[in-house]
Image (tube, rainbow, N blue to C red):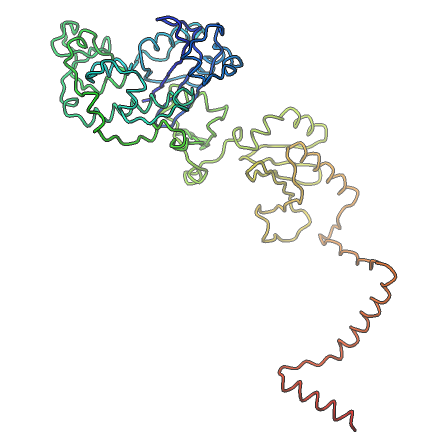
Length: 474
């Protein structure tokens, strides 16, 4: 089940706001494949009518609203980022109607009719106690959702708080015997939950269900809410409940688990894995068949499954796609072939072959195919190739270097025997008038070096000294 959590912030000038009052959109999806977050400020239609609450929500930084993108552009991005979801979760009905109207004005329809309004759900099952109705921030505090003044009003975090609240309600439902033993009836035609004996069930009487379906998008009968027969908890007693942190429902940004960066599709005959931003799979991964896509948390996991990298979303493939027209034109004019294969680029010229390999951290290495070497060296990490001691930043710069290298090799070919010519001896460098003395001293040192006697111990050295002294006395 894929859920989309949406929170809006609007300039509350009237009881019922209009889409033009929205100044922040916050969305976060959660599914077995991971999470996706998107939150942005939007440009208000009337900047001259800001309320004090709106100014406090943007920390009195009105510039973020003046320079924000138009509402239509933001909502178009929301529709592209979250093209499919099973359940839509919001805080209140007013927020739901405002979001639905804003999406409709931009030409988009909601993907599902299953909507969870946590404010109405909690109002039906949690007794408010002496304080009456409790605002959103106090409800978060009651359910032990940690918030701060700096993050509560930021668009990129608000939907995460709603996600965590939904998860805490699910945990509370699983821990409560009253919740699990409560008998309810579901009308499948209207997807509405009723108490037994409700007049709106009709002649069929509905299907028995548990209150858990309320967290999966089923609506609660309004007449049954008025009976207050579903009060299962009291707000004041929630402080004693122990909640477990959920991997995908943590509001603080530093606690978010790492989102999977790689995906693969089950049953793919090509056995490819893709980056999460790959243009060839992103529309399908976030579409109706998203359950077929499985996450990977590293290239080691992909190698263990026998998967190979997609050419279009590999680091070199992305850079190749950005300069494809320029690369193809350059190669066609010079009779070269440039092929992207398995995340690497093979370049073939009239003289030899080359290979561009991604080494990580924006580093591209160039390898030249062995044509004048009889054996491989241990330092060669790619069999049949040797690395070039040159490093460029772009693919085009490497192609220009290859052309210059081939031109030089045509003018200065290597011997056909395959042997590399020996290097010429270096001429002695003259460092002034003293170089003659240096040469003379070197000859003197070489002469005495040949007469040097090797000894292995101090006793032998002393014996040689005595012999020398005896010979001088004679």
